[in-house]
Amino acid sequence: MISRYWHGAVPSHMGDAFDQHFNNNVLAEIAALTGNLGVFVKRRAFGGYDHFFLVSYWDTWDSIRAFAGDRPHIAVHYPEDERFGLIADPIVLHQQCTTVDPWFGQ
Image 1 (cartoon, rainbow, N blue to C red):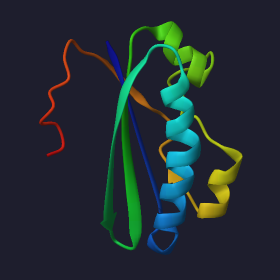
Image 2: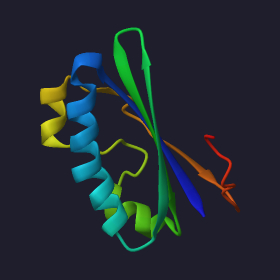
Image 3: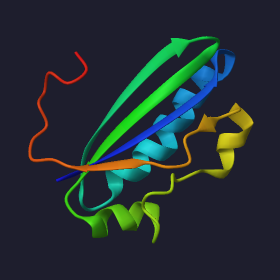
Image 4: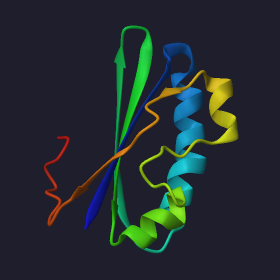
């Protein structure tokens, strides 16, 4: 299993709207892809921004490439992201892992 880590932040006044966009578009797309094993999203407010942390879990690199393209270490961006003032890390991190514990994030 491969985990994929992404982080982005929007001004707090745009947090709820971005959350809706994120759930309806990004997470819906990821969930529909063959090879996706699940996602974990954490939202935190800090310093006038709402931060979104996404960890997605994948069965193979081919499955990740089906989502992210030929350069899977580069973050995927959506055209609508700009209207929310999204500031996102341009690089995502990947980690080979064997299990995901259900207590994560509790």
